[in-house]
Length: 96
Image (cartoon, rainbow, N blue to C red; front, side):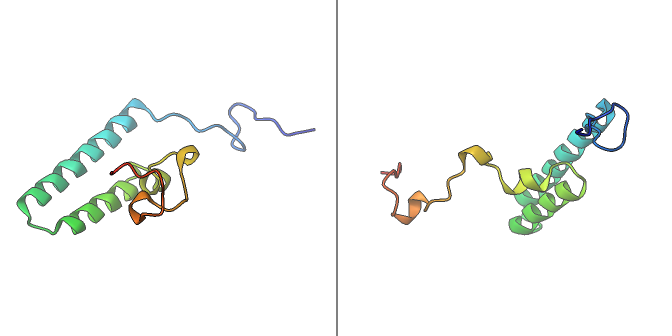
């Protein structure tokens, strides 16, 4: 007999959606990190590569986004692991 999920049990319990307060704090953190990074890049106080990496690191540390979303922006169903169009080996280059 297969084990079934029982509501309220710790084993196999479904993840709960975040509360409105958690959602607001996550959104506020993301907007704040973006705004600070934008100002630092615009004023050139810190090199833009360092600012981008620092902002991405903060987003991961504060759990604003997951590593899966950060490193793989293309959905798994649409990924192509063939040679890119800019190498000249693909016949479907759209850049003329």
